[in-house]
Structures are given as C-alpha cells and as structure tokens.
Length: 514
Image: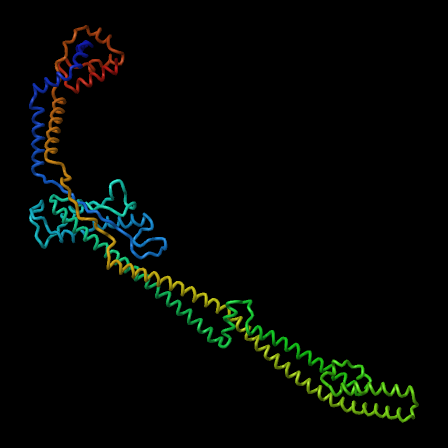
C-alpha cells in the first residue's frame, strides 16, 4: 500500500498566505513565459495600429415635413396629424438610404477612392462594385437626435463613415441628394398608382351614373306631361298635387251633377202627376220649381185665384157675376197651367239629358285622372329607386373625383418639391470616431501582459510544500474523515511542489471536508 503523508495545517496556511512572493519568484525564474506573450501581443497591436487608418463620420441633419395639401381643417399645411405618420415617413427614408439604387447612384456621383483600397484599382466602367455597395451600406446609419426616437421629432441624422473625412462629407451630400430624389420618385410612383386606381374607380362610377341617368330619362319620357306630378309624388307622397286637386274637384262636380239630375227626376215625377191633379202641384215645394219660373207664377196665380173665388162665394151666390168671373179666371189659370205643365215636362227632360251628359263627361274625366294617378303610382317606386341610384352614383363619382384630384395634387407636389430639408452642411468633426493608435498599442500591451501572467500561473508550479511528517499508515487513515478513508490516497497531494491549479484543488477539498 502506498504511504500517505499528512501536511501540517499551519504549514499549509503559511504556504497559501504568500501568493505574491510566489508570483514574484515565478516571474524571476520563468521570464520567457510571460514576456514572450506580452511582446508578441504588443507587436501585433503596433502592427495593427500602424496599418489601420482612422475612421471619420460625417453627420447631416435632415428634417421631414408632411404634404402641403391637407383634408383636415384642423391640420396646418406641412404638419403631421399623428406621430405614426411621421414615424412611417422616417422609416421609409431609412429603408431608402440603404437601397441599392441610392447607394449605387451616390457612389457613381462621388466616384471611386483616389488611393488603392483592399479591392485594388477599380475600373471606371466596373464602379461601383458589389463589395463597395455593401461596404457603404454597412457604414450608413439613420438615427433620431439623442434622447429621442422616430416619430417624436421631425429632425433626424444621416451618418456616413469613411477613412477619408472629405470623402465622408462628399458621400453624405451625395446620399442626401439621392435620398431626396428617390423619395420624390417614390412619391411620384405612389401617386401615379393611386391615379391609375382611382381613375378606374371614376370610370366605373361614371358608367354606373350614365346607366342610371339613362334609365331615369326613359322613365320621365314615358311619363310625359305628368312628370311634374311624379316629381311631386316622389318628394312628398302625401302632398296635394294638381292631379289630386283635380280628382277632388271632379268628385265635387260629379256629386253636384248627380244631385241636380235627381232633382230633375223628382220634378218630372211631380209634373207628370200634376197633369191629372193640379191640386198636387199646389203642394209642390217652391224649391223644385226654381228652374220653372212660369210654372211657379201660374201656381201662385192659381192659389190666389182659388182664394179669391172662395172669398167671393162666401159673400155672394154662384150666379152672381163676380163669382162667375172669379170661377172663369180660375179655370183660365188651370187651363194655362195644364199647358205649361206639358212645356215644363219637356224642359225637365232636356235638363235631365244635359245632366246625364254632364255626368258622363265628369265620370270620364274622373276615370282618366284616376288612371293617370294609378300609372304614376306604378311608376313611382321605380322612379324613386332610379333617383336614389343616380344620387348614390353621383356622390360616389364626386368622392372619386375628389380623391383623383388629391392624387394628382400629390403627384404634382412630388414632382415639384421635396419633403426633406437639409439643415446646414455635413459635419465631420475634429476627431475620428475610431480608436486612436496609442489606445490600440496600450491595449495590446495590457492584453499581452495579462496573457503572459495567465500562462505563467497555469503552467508553473508553486513553491515546494513543507516536508510532511512521517506517520504510521494506520494512524494516517484513522485521522481522515470517514468519507476520505477509502480514497485518501487520491485526495492527498504529491510529495513535491504543487502548481496553482493543484493548490486550488487541494484548498477546495480541505475546505469541503474540514
């Protein structure tokens, strides 16, 4: 069995408590292990610092506005109604700044770099190359002012990086020009697409309006002279139109004619009856004899004669000349009344024929008027529907034409003015945005030293451990905890010195079991 050696705990504590002395000892004993990495890293940093060029960043402040024409009465021209609209426009400009068309045109405008770059000399006809375009895309940034975000302010910045400050400024100017130009073209194409779409809507609305107007014209032509009545019925179904007043007037006249006819019939009946009995004529109301003034006077004369005869007879005998004269006068009146009755009957017959003719005419006019009303009533529903269709199509056409005018106005504005305004000129600054050469070399030196120390601590063992105290094997095992008695030989360190990693493992095990 292998002998185990238990280190003294005080010696171990003294051995661990002096890491700085061990570190200085290792630095002195193994100088190449830490100086070589430090020198190599420093030389690499110096090489990189000498070879690399400074990066400059040009920044151009830009401001975007809304279109001058607006449909909202509460919105001022050029002002965004909502922050979402401004954010959408700014994000569109951001995408445009990275588009291949903008980058290609800007590089063509500026031209290739004067000095040879990593690509070598670029031919004029091959400029710009795909690599140059991708490089420019990676060096472009569109950002809002510090502390703000897109949609909260109309101002934003276009930032371009390049190794030459003057070229960075020139690229920024060219990109701004191309962004403004491409944004105008985008607005123009957008407006043109809207014009094409709305133009089809206007044509469809105009076609529908023409069809409805043609149908309305056919209905009005079929109505003819009753068009005014139809329009009155459409505007006010319960209104009092001329035809309705005409119907009411004809009804009144027809009732009057029929009443007159009934009066003539009654009068004829009385006159025929009076032929056989003149006394019945005396009892006839004067209202029936208004149309027969002669007959009415004879009736009154007969009544007067009868009264006179009665008065004379009451005073004298029938043979008295006065009585006889009164009787003869009464008989003469009766004779003339009988003759007048025949004339009155013929006159009443004539009045009845006139009344019948008048009734027939009134009934014909009433029937004709009612038929016109019925025809208008049958047409009114279709007429009202057609008028509504015409009104609807006219409104749709007006809205489409208004939208078309707005689209054309937007296109004209896109072709004549830009919504992007440049604030001042590109600003490059007085210092490059990349790290300076001194910082790179200092960083390489610090990194090399750190790498050398790490290599030193991982590979060089620490100072030799104190000489272990020899003890019997059974006593060494008895002093170990129960968990370590089976694997005690593996947990104890070797007799010689320990490296840093071995020392850390041993300290961890001791802390765990003690």
